[in-house]
Image (tube, rainbow, N blue to C red; front, side, top):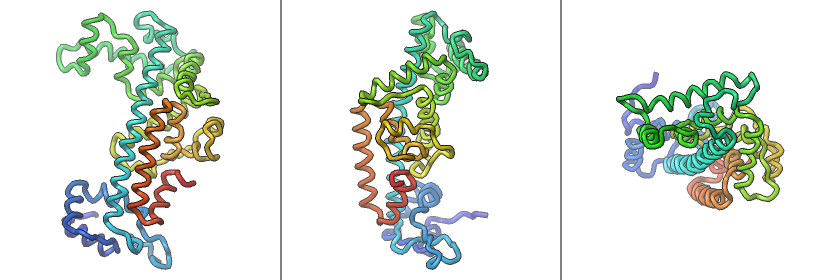
Length: 314
């Protein structure tokens, strides 16, 4: 059982394991703000001694020269990485919502056409998810009628002004997971048109995007968005199943496996296929600056391990 330890005791434990602490007062201020579990347990791995000759019993010991400041630097890097990645994923989320609402409404312009089952894929495998989507949209429409505790006042305000709630308004209140499912259950022509809209936006010569490939990008974006939004450790996160994106990987001129292995680097490279070029260039410029700052802050060994875990050196 883990028992409570004061900040002084926590620092003593770290020092007993070989971690150097240059300024104990500053370290205690960090622990009071960010807590031991989030900082140490979340970011200690690249600094632990794995050499069996130096650590024959596999104890939690730190490599010679490892400092509290190194762990803090990685923690701060990952926090900034989460903000960068989340910003791009929110742009992607906004874009898929806009494109889906536009193309669906263009095809089915009647009021509340998105509630009609006939306007979705005829594949029986999609019926259950289709019904969930239409029920969710209907619940959003009904939600503005509640007299008290209206969840989305914006919907009531729009309805009172326009007397209906079109899809391009409602999609803004769907989660990325719900939008992913929505995209899955519309008909194939619409799916292909939306995927092509993304390819057109990128302006990258020779890049195309199929509906199935957009499904795969959504499948990696959703869990990474949740990781970033919930402030979990991001850099080593990867999907368990490889992505089926070999064709797109080749079109993006990436090394074999660098896009399909589901790492943080995979996600970053895939965002090029769904992002306007000027936005993607600004994003990668900020990312490279962040990586360079980490390289300056860490010893070579831990830095290489972090980059490898994130998928940048595989």
